[in-house]
Image (cartoon, rainbow, N blue to C red; front, side, top):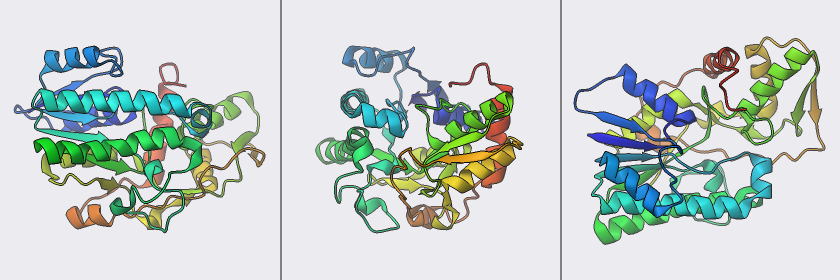
Length: 313
């Protein structure tokens, strides 16, 4: 088995590398490709990558990503670049005879107006939230393509839908990053500069967070064991959903910050909640143990402080 991981040096790619290194096998070869290895928006560059490595399996993580405020500004760019990347990767996987491809989606693809908890059957039940519709529709199209490649060519292409991922090697940029890494960097700077921590929004929106290492362990299982074309949500349970305020408090504790915390309610909150059901995952893996959020967050904070100079920010 020769596995090509696109987006292999990012948050989830680095976690998969850790899982693979902890469970080595002579029958497996893993290639972790980054944007330096190929421009996946370009078909010729994508083809050269596939021809060079000749993978039998693909984990497709590469995407143009960003937090709420970047998405609001560049919806068209998120749509065009991600559609190109996904079309190129899936088409080359088909053309080169890849046996299985697992793509990574996001819970932001789900309809904005919906009932909760969300499950895998509801992906296409209405438009996504306005804030990042370009990215959301591009990610939804992977599910459409997977079904079409299976219907027309019998390809075993599937997808996973993680909730909010965090961990080492994340993008800790305060403007562009996601909520957890953004908070970690903000707390670091507030502590360093002896200033209050300013959290954007009211702190009331609720999210399910999954540690990148847990997601990586589950994605390797999906690659090897999961036999459906339909997507599978990879997430902690509904009972583990927490508010942004609780998240900020956990980061404050993990970073040992003693200063003042202020909520800037002039900033947008984004979607209030997108609670996802992990019922399907639990039917397959009732035994799976998630890393407790306090422990996982402490590991992430420690990694950021120890690797501050090389961390994306």
